[in-house]
Image (cartoon, rainbow, N blue to C red; front, side, top):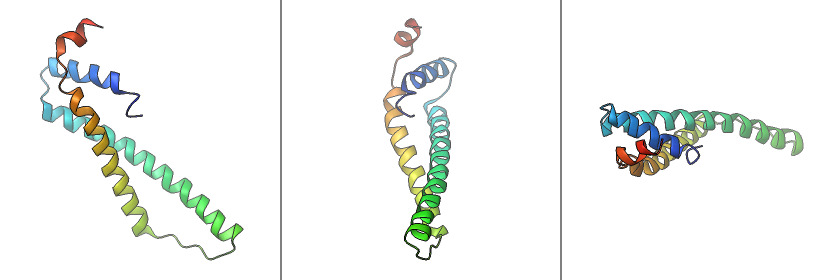
Length: 106
């Protein structure tokens, strides 16, 4: 999702910079976007993975299954950190684009 929206992100960044947005404002906006993407993905992965793990452990292997919320929260926080980090690393060069060439190609 992050790579697919790179072209639109360049366009958005250039238009917002033209309208007066600072680099700090753009980084904050993109960080929020990446955090929401990462949170939605992490919650879906936690639910799907938890249900699949419970089914395999409890039904197939007939062993007791326990949900560990500490591990789940740590996993979600790690996923958010990685998603925001990778997203901002890719966005950093987007913020360096000059406005004129991008706006000419519209």
